[in-house]
Amino acid sequence: MTYGTDLLMEEVSYVAYHFHWPLDAILDLEHPLRRDFVTRIGGINAAVNAAAEARSAGLAAAGSGAGSAEDGW
Image (cartoon, rainbow, N blue to C red; front, side):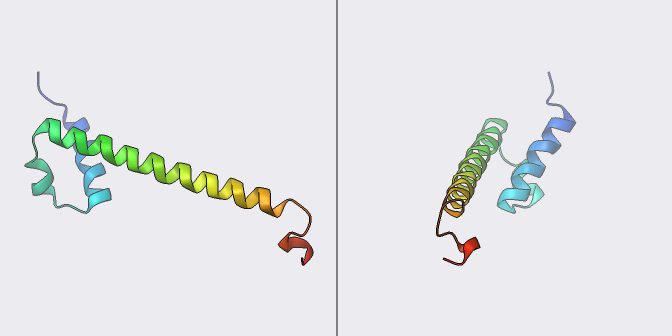
């Protein structure tokens, strides 16, 4: 069974976008190692997104009470 061209290009694009590695460097990776990078990038993105959502939720909660910046206090 061969690895699908579409899936390969998706992985390569994902790694290139996030790590700014050249095409040849990514294609030189063995498939399991490339998949590991894809998985790790996904984990990094999930953690960053969760932190951003928590920060936004905290800012929204802080701005909804008395003495918020909206009422000049």
